[in-house]
Length: 269
Image 1 (cartoon, rainbow, N blue to C red):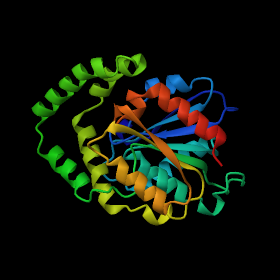
Image 2 (image 1 turned 30 degrees about the vertical axis):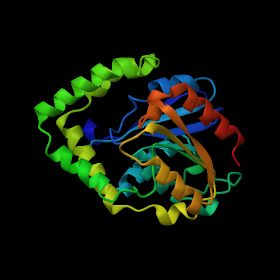
Image 3 (image 1 turned 180 degrees about the vertical axis):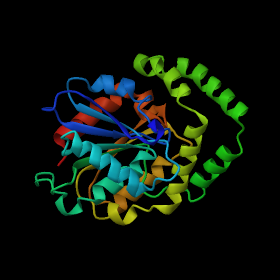
Image 4 (image 1 turned 90 degrees about the vertical axis):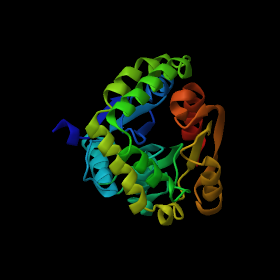
């Protein structure tokens, strides 16, 4: 079934630095199109779309992503963990903690992580009740109401993404992909947040870690996340909050975010 297949798309020359995008709860690349366009010619951008699985664990996601990267000959690069995708990013990074020196050779059969950028992401979500509350809301939202919410979002997107034409053009695809199975898969991903705790891994990470945030974020308290990273993650190198952006910072400040990502990838040690 297509729903159970992980998908990958690669943009840019193999000689360019590689950035692997792990999307948020929605699980696809539809909200990163303007960000990808802003990276063109500077970064090889690898996009992942998750399967609509109701049974996968974080380890299953990690296994599948690492396998598909290696199968495409992609052995080394940075990770971009957006929101929920940050959990998979930590898990991938945890697999090669013994080779977290950016100049080290990749371990055999492993994707070597040179650095990590969190975009509205987190370690363990600071609000213990947050993911469960979102899952409860999803379980109690009727299909009719959900469709209405999508229509409102599509209308709002015309204003919100007016300066990001590539993202605006992908909004209809984003809405179309929100099927009933897709909703179920998102709720299962929320369930995984309660079962997975990457804090022990983050305390050992020494490769560069950076943070991107939008100031208007009711889903992830970025102030608390960055506070934790500063205190507990040896690799944390700082970040930036875009004051006119929201939780989907890659979609709402694509050019500014892209310029920072390129700078971090070129200069972080």
